[in-house]
Amino acid sequence: MKIAIAGAGNVGRAIAKELIGNGHQILLMDKDPKAIKIESVPNAEWLLADVCEIAALDRANLTSCQVLIAATGDDKANLVTSLLAKTEYGIPRVVARINHPKNEWMFDESWGVDVAVSTPRVIAAIVEEAVAIGDLVRLFSINQGSTNLVEITLPEKSKCVGKTVGEIELPTGVILAAIIRDKEVFAPAKHDTFSSGDELIFVATTASEALLKSCFID
Image: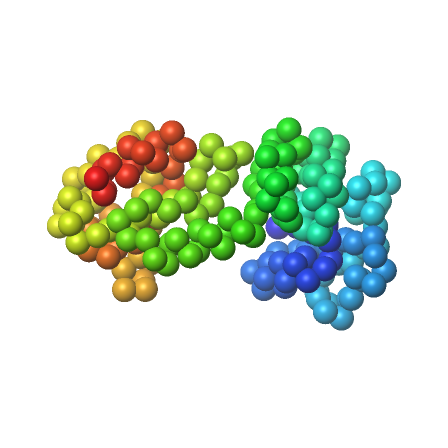
């Protein structure tokens, strides 16, 4: 998959290295000549360009990309780049970095953003996931916030402990994606039995989260 990354700072380069390691083709763009550090990510394609300008994005041939990641340190630039990527080049998936939480409300489909990533929110989710047992933790939001990746760690007194996956009727809009047990991850089958301490990973609509919690915790 070809992925364009707007912003070749520390964040952009780190993302590029990770994605290249997973076998993707990466284009790194930045308007600052000092950010063009080809030796830092030698397997990426590099472009000196202002990602907020159509002419520069034309040179990047964005129509050949399946994903654009707006990862600059400027929220205004990330919003403009996201909007151009979606409306002018029809990129199917646009991911945008939020630098300042106060701007989070703008990062939605009206600006062409499919997934918005806020570092404070991610850190908070990680902390909650590490300490919360018997509660629902929202790890990540997708589809403009209407769908979420959520986690529940089953307490000893959960009414689901000892029951099989097939015995639990999930609310509409919820899919049990994975079970983590003793640091091992496996896809749930109907005959699998829930145990105390299991970390359950769900894809769930926002509207279904309260019902999901009642199934496994309340």
